Image (cartoon, rainbow, N blue to C red):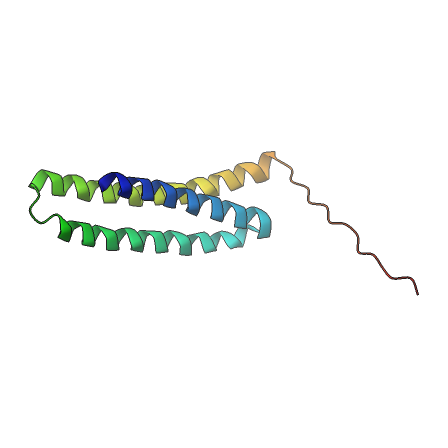
Length: 111
């Protein structure tokens, strides 16, 4: 069960980073604020799962409970660092990589 929690934290971090970076590159820097909404959403989900998981392991040892608490905190750190990395990657891409998007010209009807 705890491996599943770690995996979800990593997948959530990748989703936060990829969606934030894509939105910022495609639509502009201010769209990075949507990434904050994703970040807060994933952190709230993580906290709900933490409460549910801690209720489920009532008969566990204190060390197991402490380990579980640290793993859920680690997930929150993964999510926060993923968001920060998307901001850093956006800055690096904007500074060192030129992205050119060429749209085809519309075809005007003759008439």
